[in-house]
Image (cartoon, rainbow, N blue to C red):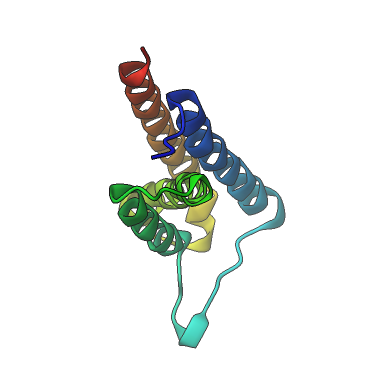
Length: 130
């Protein structure tokens, strides 16, 4: 089986997770809040993140022999995690208004969750290094 090295795995998850978080927050704070309403239902990026994370995790649970599939699954895991972690505090600790998207509570909560995720990833990386 063609398993990526721990450092490559770390980067394939960490870089997309941080990039999507930074890009999303820049978009929200500089351009403003825009909503997606497929079929008339509001879809938060938490839901999109979960829809990306779950298939990626399932693929990683039964590793492929294809390096491309493994790498894409890890990138998807990073992107989906960044989307989901960014919005948890907003939905749980605010009234979920457009103003709350860019509130200090939402931003600091998202930053705290992202920090915890990065610490966990780094701990897992260090535990797998020889």
